[in-house]
Image (cartoon, rainbow, N blue to C red):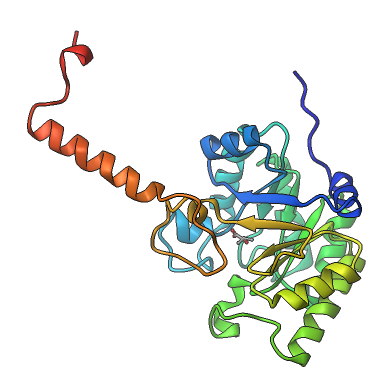
Length: 267
Ligand code: KIV
């Protein structure tokens, strides 16, 4: 059966109809196909793959090759959801030409439908040129983890009038530059509400309150699979990490004590 893919116009319609948009992260075929089967609207192959799967301290070291590798696996598992590839640090900052070429690789090689990149006014022109090349772009404001050293940490952004106004103006500028949606990360709920009301494209919140047009979480966090990180904004729907470790311990114990394999597992 041919399944209709979620498109950028579907997302605008959902905003108009006040239907909440759901987004989760995936880095591999299996998780992506599960999320798609369950009906999530957007799947983000986040550069959070760096912290969550690859063991880096933050997202800075993630490379284009790593992102393309994970995006390929995810796009193979998805029929309905829109798949968005996160452009890694230094794949779009050095020059517009390089940014357009790298964005193109996400669509041509990794077969995703859109890219996401972080930043406000400093990336408007880059976004215009990527969108002009026919590539849908999602923006990302508020806490932008690729700028962790410049920001001085992972604190809430947009507190105080000056910072809030900058985020509001950046959101309007991103819309004008052509993004189809904006992730708002770790900003006060009141500011996220204001941004959401004042732009025509959907906002997707993470730690940005209930009034955004949609929500995103890192799937490994919400499953309790990535146990190291427990941010206030991420609800734990399960403790799968603990459950997995129980299985490993049971297996080790059974092999050591010759309880596994049993008759039923032997030929
Ligand atoms: O990399 C990522 O997973 C993200 C989400 C947290 C929005 O950017």
